[in-house]
Amino acid sequence: MIDTDFAFMGDYVLFSFGYYLSLRVSYIMRCAIFSRHGKVYHLDKYIIRGGNPLFGEVEISGAKNAAVAIIPAALMVEGVCRIENIPQISDADMLLTILSEMGAKVRTINKNTVEIDCTSVCREGAPYDLMRKIRASYYLIGAMLGRFGSAKTTMPGGCNFGVRPIDQHIKGMTALGAHVEVKGGFVYAEAPNGVLTGNKVYLDKVSVGATMNIMIAASKAQGKTTIENAAREPHIVDLANFLNSMGADVRGAGTDTIKIYGVEKLHGGTYTIIPDQIEAGTYMAAVAATGGEITIKNVIPKHLDCISAKLREMGVEIDEYPDYVVVRRMGKLTRANVKTQPYPGFPTDMQPQISTVLCLAEGTSVVTEGVWDNRYKYISELKKMGAEVQVDGKTAVIEGVPFLTGAPVAACDLRAGAAVVIAGLCAKGETVVEDVSYIERGYQDLVGKLNNLGADIVCVSEPDEYTSAVV
Figure (cartoon, rainbow, N blue to C red):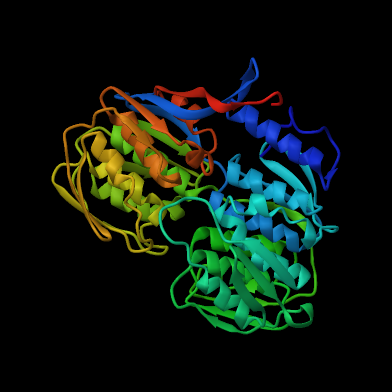
């Protein structure tokens, strides 16, 4: 998570401006931020020289979508909670900072392992300016309600690819007895007498975030909570396993009905986050686009079935082993139709990456977005590179082209950023990707991992508009 060279050594850091500073120094160094003559320089673009097939091995990091729920859930735990395999990404950094500002003791064990002790946290320390910067801040609603009986958080931030309704989150908290109000960009929630009460919750639509948030809150509610029409993603199972390892009683995660029997207290323990399904899928898509052969290590192949099946349909070869897969593409790509759906269907977080690959497939492909509205903003960026795509509502019709051409493009959001990077890797000429902070939210060392596979991609730093005497 945080480089130990720059974190304060050894001891727990408490309440801590010191810890916040160590986070910022680590993040600054990791993103190649530096100062010269008073000007602040920062990483803000990738330059990619495309046309290189990918070969070699890549190791997958911990799952972003699990980590950003598990870290807030640690707020419920009284005692030392050791979390392993945390990805080194800015969203996880931000959440650890938020807990530290609330009074948690956070200790860095190594770059992917931290110990968190939330015994002495207080709600009043919540840093709202940090909360509003990330989508996963809404998990603090459930965690604060479960811990304090009340919550105040900001509306979720993060990627800008559509409206982020939290109506199903609110429905769940209301069912547990909380009074919830949204005003002035904040979410206010209060449980009667500070205690939530178990209840049945039927989600009107399958929602990963709402399922996880209700699970967190219900873990310490009085009585039994049943979530029906629950999401089934691997990171939901991972959150349930984390909570159970800390003394919760969550049953049925991975099915559409989850039952949570509230407990009085969660205790400390050790938990290892699962590998990132979407990061692995992104590298699978990258080698599909560029050609070559790579071994993707530290994966759960079953979690990749929905992605592997579609890539095989397109002519990509995939060999599965207990904890790694080998992906190769030597011949031509063939057309395919893709529709994103809740797990175990094809994941919406892989839609931009697979669409980029389909831009190079022979024939006409149709992609239908079945989860989010307005997730095709990146298509205009691919068109700059020669892609032939027409979008009508939630449907994109893609006519395959022989090749893409490098161009200046922008990362519209996290997964769109991954998509334009993949496009740059297979394009003729040079591609410049702006707004890469979106990519840093969810991919650990993307540039380093791609270069190790034979890509030609570099980080470029440019001066900000302002000056500063402190870095």
